[in-house]
Image (tube, rainbow, N blue to C red; front, side, top):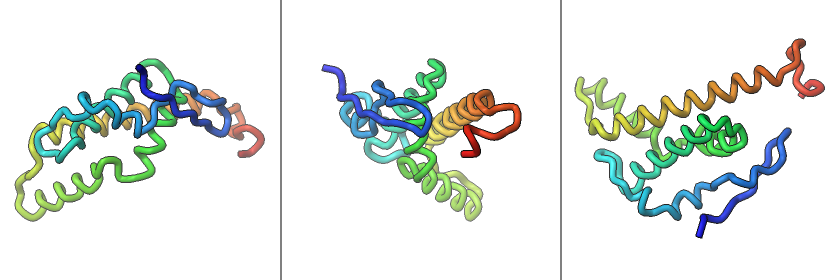
Length: 140
């Protein structure tokens, strides 16, 4: 059976009845368990699935799904990616060598690039919705 649907809403849009929550992602254990060398436990699988979901939503032009997915990613250190990158930068600065496995670097790079593309798409969408005077919906 399909995973349960979690309802969300945004300020100016109705509920997105097709949104998938982070807990729903955890239910897809076979996909999430895909190991990525250099990332612990299910982190690699979750990162790959999150990147895939971002790409699917962006390519489908699903603004609501992007808002939902990005809300959890940009507000916090998603899957410890920021900590991993800071640790990697520290190690390179101290030793001149990377300690992060190539697979992990690729997975994190793909995730970061897809996140940036999605945010760019949302910014473009917001720009199209903004009236000529730059005021959005009565000054909000």
